[in-house]
Length: 360
Image 1 (tube, rainbow, N blue to C red):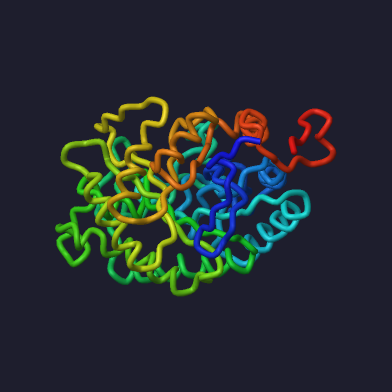
Image 2: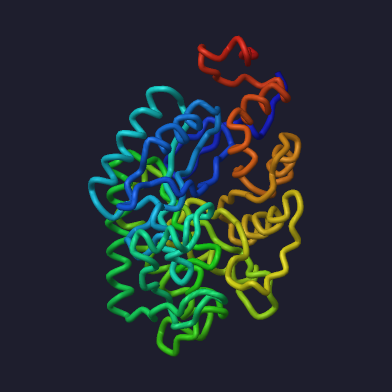
């Protein structure tokens, strides 16, 4: 057997992962209209439980009804949703060793959209778009103008993040990832494109970081140290006048000081003027710089599709973990195939060994 970084264990916060493969949170838009996970999620997450990945992170899950991207997004704003997730996790743990996390989100000025394969007419049938919340009354181009959050409204949202994190703990999740990327609420506080506030939460870098750091700090206080707490960020807006990689390094340093266990370095989503150099591993340099300059474990994400490519990211010290999205949704057995490629041992359910024999 060839030793690999990809299939070496890693301790993330207080959670030991069997390997460095992470399944990214990927929206399924298949909850019922009350935010309740459905049987689709049982199937979807169950397939990841036997995938061989070290960690799978459940899709962006709203901390409040107003924070949903669509009327079919999952939520964690009530105990019934938490219990449904707990049932799904109990099933997943019976069938496979993969650890599970959940991404807590609020879509801000990009909320209240239609399901991708439906249209506006279908959304109207479910009550139409709802009022959106953002740092400033600045619309994402082509969207409705959101309501600017008051300081009291921000305090209420912190309480919602805390309550959702506590439900995630009770449901049995090993990891919570706070969604601070892609132009959604917390990222929109960071980005000059969307934060035009003139109070203590706008203007300078220090002020624009304040609310996202307050959210993280509040969640950190209730999330167990025996588990892991991380943040997905947009490391750059890919615009000359937006959020920059140097800003992300400083933000990551602040997160580290507050007890953050990792940063997942994604990018973009704040402005349609972004110029993204899309290509294989195009976001890996963002992860590398944050890892080196902030001294925080990172996940690399973005068009990582090949086992040799993933291994190189790790062996060259560019990230501690690699997160796969579309590649593993297309091929949920990606870790099995990668293990066979490297002749590494990989647990495979006995029901499937005839197709994918274990290599010892």
